[in-house]
Amino acid sequence: MPGFSSDLYTQCRNTLLRCHEFESYRSLRTLFVAEPLFAFRVGLPSADSPADLVDRCLDYLVERRLRDGRSVLPVFLATLRDRYLPGDALCGELQDLYEVVQAAMTPQSPPSPLAPHRSQQLFDMLLRLNFGEQVRIAKQVIETHRIAAFLVHGEPDCGQQLLVNRLIRLSPGWQTGQRICIDAGSNGVGKSSHSLWRQVASKLGMPASTPPVVIAEKVCEWWQTQDVIFVFHTVDYIPSALLSAWVQEFWQPLVAAAHCSQHLTQHDTHLLLFLVDYSGCVCRWNNFALARQSDQAEYPHIPLHLPPAGRFAPDAVGFWIDMAAEILPSGLTSQLLLAASDNGIPQMIYHTICDHCGLSWEGELVKWLS
View 1: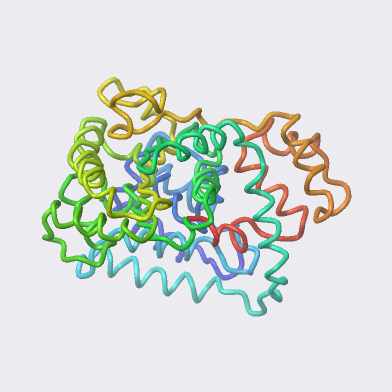
View 2: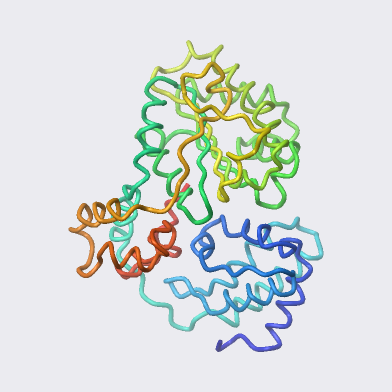
């Protein structure tokens, strides 16, 4: 690729081989939860050794660009850099590498931006593509529970992040409430209870050493006047025993405190927890308790097992195309979408729709994801 010399490739390779994220394919994929990298999880190649994984990852990313003209590789390096603490030698090395790669691969004449309303309109329509069963169940739950917890899960690349965004739109007020989003796969956050508490406190604007009881009091204070929504991404990165203990340590005391203060709150506010599993493994963990029905005595102290996200059915894709016909260019058919998406993989369908509309999923649409 122009601008990316063999010497620069070697420099990248030597640095990446020292990053623990390349110890396994699963660890590497946790980098691709954050946007705009999320859109490139579909084609990310796997390998059996760290060296092969570095080579294949570089070969894959060096040829890819976002729709706005930016190269994906510098974005990847910046995301990887942010997983290491300032002052860490590897963090500094990744920063230097990022600057060199960014300068070498920045296009001279980036394309003109497209009209913002077009991408917003398409994104709103994409939120209505399938996931009807999960939405129906979640609606039923929030009609009877002002405190609710959900496990959003499915196989890789099945649109879990878009599904969460759709569920968060079930109530108009949820868009303006307090939303606390934490990526458990970022910088080892999900490897210890201490790191998880520190992230929660930081997101709440409180010192890292804030006791859990004080955090619960702050959340209940917010809940008196507004919705409070916790979203934990990549919970499949958290060891099963730790995730089970974390729900007991964090969520269950918060539910108990909220029940005690419920009479002080506005009647239309909700306290919500979304655990988002991007690999589809959490629901199979024997030591992680899940509710199968929202009328179970344990609910909402334990999350509700929503139906897994999966491939979109042909009839659902065809129905969506008919519904979105006014904003879609001619020539887009359900047959085309299914053929280009390995028979309905959601992430690949989003890409194909956006490409057909002259937009970019990773560069223009995913900025609205939670």
